[in-house]
Each structure stands twice: as structure tokens, then as C-alpha cells.
Image (cartoon, rainbow, N blue to C red):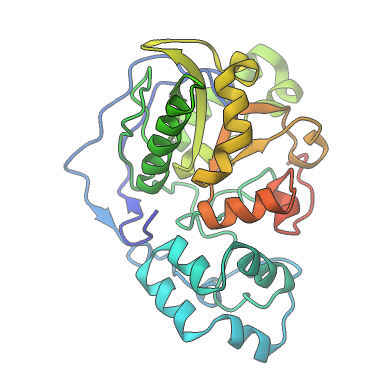
Length: 306
């Protein structure tokens, strides 16, 4: 997303969704976006763009002042001011260099993994969204969605390119089952899972309110479709579409967020349908580095529980 205009006033697009929270089978008619809602910059909402201006620092990050100044160069500062996350990563030397700078602490004066309006933000069971009522800029992708789901603009554009590429490659049609989900909708989604599975079972498949990547507008739950006839998310990983996504999502800036055998780190069961948009540069570094969790990629502790 472009960070300028990244927040909307309360009351933007919301859905009546029921099901799991990290990846949800969504039901009900979506509410349309309110054209009267005016976008506001993060600064106007009291969210500074630079890490040095935030009240809380990234945990366990130490850096030498000279190294931090070298990373937080004028070109990086200029990219921060532009609000373009992909341009910022490129200005820092590309996905791998950006990651290395963050992990080593050399980016601590200018980059935050907690800022909800940057594509690389980390949200997990130990890292809630701050502010908790964050609402991103939202658009409806061209990709078919049974509920009319919305995404962050960059994520929507990338999703459309990815689903078109899958179709051109002969993998078949892909639909967007669930995209943006508000805090209030997540209250209902998580509560329904607690009623169905109990708290322990719900926490394996549903994010608690304020801890869901869907609230960022950067998460997409996918389904295999034939026209407007779509399967369920739970079947997606075994379909030609799901297999193509597993191999190629990174080319379009997406990662499969909850892979098999990573529950001890993520706290969630495998969800091959749940994709997270991080941008092409970082997704390429993630893929080429052989990472299986976003926590490992950023050198963060495992987050299996709240």
C-alpha cells in the first residue's frame, strides 16, 4: 500500500463473516464501501512513519549509531516520505538487504515491524495491531469474490495479476473468499469459533480480535473456482490452483503465511489458502531464503500463544 492515505475513519467496509479468523469461510452479504469516508494520513491519526518517532522500539534490537545512519540514508528517508513500501525496500538495497538491516538492528532508527500501514508489518499472537482500530485504505479487486471482499490497493492489484497468471498457466480460476475484516467482525468470527471448538481449538484456527492479519487488508483467503462456482478454502491446497499458488505466489508479492508443520512457531494449523501480501522484493527474499514462517524471516521469537 501507499502509506499516504492508509487510514480511513471508523466505519469503512465491513462484512458479516462467520468461521475461523486466520482463514475464514465467509458468509453473508458484504457492506459496500462508504464513498463519503475520507482517507487520512497516518500522521493525522497520530501514527508516525519513522520508527524513531514511535513510542515503542522493536524488541531486542541493538545497533551501532553509524550503522543505523548508513541504513537510514537520505534515499531511504525519501522513500519513507513517499509512502511507497516497495520503493523503500529497493532504496535499502532490495528484499534481502532490507531484511538483514532490520534483523541486525541497523534499521532501528527508521523502520518498524509494528507500523500497521507498511506492507511488512508483523502481526501474530504476540504482536497485536496498534492502533487496535486501524482501518486501511480499501478497494475491491477484479478477482471474483463470492462475498465482494476488499483489500489494500497494492494487495488487490497484485492479487489480480496473480490470479490472471494462474489462469494463463492453465492452473484454473481462483477466487477471493475473504479479504479485509474489521476488528468488530473479528469479534464475531472468533466468538463463533470459540462456540464451536472451545478456546483452545479456536486459537489454532482463528485470530483473536486485534491480532488478525485480515484487519490490515493484506491477507487473502483463496478458493478454487469454475466461473462463480467455488470450492471451500479447506480444499484449496489439494487443487491445481492451490498447488500453483504454493509454487508461484512469491513472484507476485505473497507468501503462504501458515505452512504445514509450523504450528509451534505460528500457533496456527496449516492454512494453504491464507496468503499474506508483503511486496515482491520481500516475498522474493522469503522464497530464496527458504523461510517457512514470517517470524523466522524477521528473526522474531515464535508466537504459538497469546
